[in-house]
Image 1 (cartoon, rainbow, N blue to C red):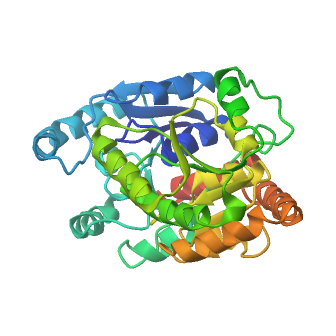
Image 2 (cartoon, rainbow, N blue to C red):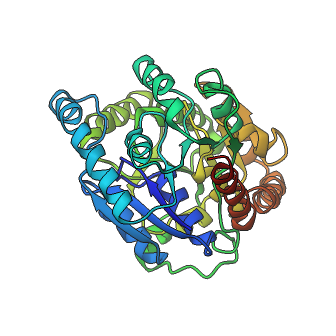
Length: 383
């Protein structure tokens, strides 16, 4: 069976990582990842590293910027036709449309060619006009995959009932993301040495308003006022795109105004494991998530997690067992829980151990691959 997994966003994030990892886990399926030509160099490199076939096509993405948005509207019909021709030429048996409810080109192209299509919904928030478009286009899909229970709850009133729907989390390889894994630290050796014996609190997040980094900064400011936490270092690891430079400067100004202490924006890493292993506590401050890969990776690395209540995090972190959960934007509780973990090495170790056990049980490649195969087969049988 040949599956074309299509996404309209080339920047590497959770959906792109999930696409590659699932394709690598399901080796008895010929998966072809289809991505846009623009902004996808890191994505294509990731595919090559895992020996996954891919093709870069001219696919514009939905954006708030005026001229790119106009280009998106004008070019989309031609891109859909080109995509349909490509699917037909490659003799694709099933289309997996990834990236969320606003990425509908693969869905329409699949139906133009008479190919069954699974629409993967991995978001928990969309603007009103996107929800309206999804309600209209959802009837074209043959089935759905929801990245979390929260995504399912968000969309269940918008898509046709009776079609196959499966809740399938993102996956993490617990052998690769392991505290005992052999990790090449060459890229970060000097940086890791500079951390010394400081308590390190890390988050992996592309710099974007949805990641709620203001909450993290406000929590850091509260910690910095406490004399027992003067040696705490906060690390933000993730891509800083050109379009987010203004936002980054705003975050830095906020950190300065609040005297938030040592907060470093470290940029992206090809391999986050060396820095993640050095972290004592992992924080997720997001305003919205579904199945956040970075949180699952931190859990697999046996890190205690302090997170806002987004996506299915609360279902897996289990407040008080693998870490702590608080409402979105609640920087005071975030600071309190970080302080609780920072002052208790035994609690950090206990929560970290629980986190890894949960990650192995919930996000293993075999389990996610089997669930994905069942979703594919059910759609093909009903089509």
